[in-house]
Image 1 (cartoon, rainbow, N blue to C red):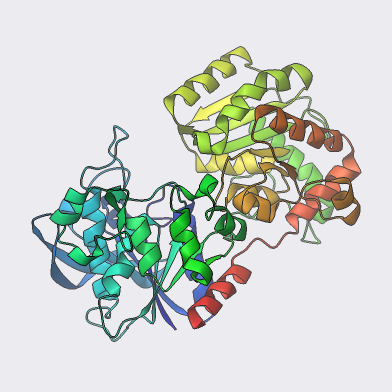
Image 2: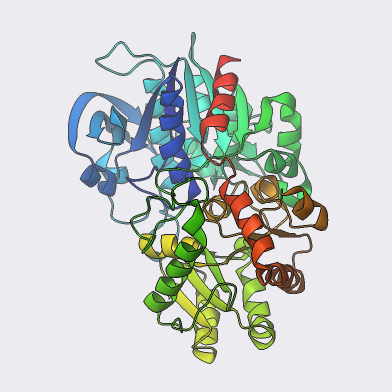
Length: 492
């Protein structure tokens, strides 16, 4: 089956979050199942610089906001995707430095409505077939609000391919004004509460939901949660109306990139599943723990197995991720335990400032790295004993799965994909050998600290701790099972 993936980002070309990882790894998994998946992205400056070669296949003149854009279709070659990557080239809209969505000052690009409408128009043209080839998609699968209009434009074609729209995070809906709607020459009949109108403006996310043949999100629990006012961001009525058209399919992770057995960022590789390495994974993890602490300038010389727990946290520093809960409980954690905490991330300036202030107060207990480092992220996953992920909501989450893979039990709130992947170390789950982490249910600092303390009780019981870690490392976390579910969806 021919499947066209459309997205606004994809690793390794450009990535701001989990969307980029999914759009990279899911097509690869589907191709391995025998499908023919092609990917189309905007031709951002960074993307153009990261591909090996380019060939122009054709162009269209498409309307924007009061102007007509010459839109080129480029075929790009990249070792990870072969020749199955296409770029929509409109220099005035995409040839910019930095983040694909926001200016360097942190505010949205003022022409985002035009940028992603033109991109969606171009993807819809590709839905008729790739110029200069005989390849025509059977299914167009678009992702998040930036491609929400793709299914709307495709719906005007007869005949047309089927359309799938995946919601990665309801918190971002691509909401624009009625003025934007009219300036972009969108069909007047779309301005209706049945279509794209949403609280006086127009929502590209809503367009993706109402015009697509199938709508998915990235975990079964999140698919249920977003149909409620607490998680639906005012779209709960729209989502409820979708009925069986809405489903949740859990994301997988890239098992090659996140593999402690081969990870080049680690000082010592390890595995609980490879018979040749299984006996030594505890010692190897301790070596990575020492290396992590040495790397970030924290005490590490006298570490022994089962002593001085290290807690890791990698995230955007925003309210959704529960960083305020961590900030609130850290002083008590440090006064009542000997734990060390390593934090990697960036986000709201107030959270950054509070964390840096705490790091000054506890220089031997807390390291805070503002920004992002791929190497440090891998070292935190391998070198930590526990991974903190107290998100208020989490559509799927990938870091908890990376942590499971690396034998670092996650401490998570019971929500979204966290609820679907982490099994709490209750008495029964421990007896059954099913526990792989620690779960709390009340979103506050006390509940988080209580879960950490429960984890530390088991941490000081080496055999039981080893069992939890090995259960985590044996989880099936790749894309194979989920890719088959998408394959079933496409066939249906």
